[in-house]
Every structure is written in C-alpha cells, then in structure tokens.
Length: 136
Ligand code: DQA
Image (tube, rainbow, N blue to C red; front, side, top):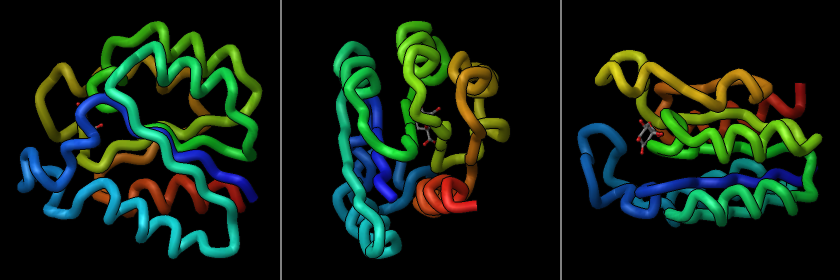
C-alpha cells in the first residue's frame, strides 16, 4: 500500500514549538517512527507552509491513501477543502492534539466534510491510526 503523509503549516516546528501540546520529537523523528511502523508499505512524507503547494501536492497524489495534518489551514482553508474534493484518493484528517479540547477556533474544520474520517488527540499515533484505517 502506498501512503502519503502531508503536514501543513507550522508542523515543521514540531519538537520546537509548544512542546506541552505537540511533544518533544521533531517531525523528522516522528516520520521515521511512522515509516518503521509501516515498514511493509511505501510511505511518502511531505511538509509545506504554503497552502497552494499543499493543494498542488494533493492534485498530483498517486497513492492509496493520504493522511493530512493541515495544521491551522484546517480551520479556514477552503482551497485545501476544494483540493481534497477534487481528487479521488481518500484523505484522512489528522491532528496530534485533541482540537475539541482546545480553543474554540480549533473546533471548526472546513475539511472534515470532504475527508474519509478524522483522527485527533493521539499525538504522533494519530498518523499511525489514520494510516492503519486504510487497511481495514
Ligand atoms: C494541529 C491542530 C491545529 O489546530 C494547529 O493549528 C496545528 C496542529 C494538531 O496537530 O493538533 O498546527 O493540526
């Protein structure tokens, strides 16, 4: 199975910013653990702070499933929502933190409705749980 893990804005700062919320591991370290977990699958990892680049990555995706942590774009990017709706590859929305237990603006997702499902609140394991769901 080919899985594409996309991380959006500020996720490159994981391990540096708000360690109490997102943990102390860097995104590279987390991605290495994800790759080890899915050792029998083909994993691609992509991160961008640019909304347009994430849309382009979604448009060109050739894989069985996409695991997307759009970061704050989740809460307001109609462009990313439309990009997800434009493709046939299923996308799962992921958050490391439990966004529903945080500030009110994080309770809104403009992408959930066009995603196959949502996983939030399990730290780095949110990515693994989302990836595993493609195998059910
Ligand atoms: C996040 C939650 C978002 O609200 C936030 O803007 C992020 C990370 C998460 O993984 O918990 O950047 O998507």
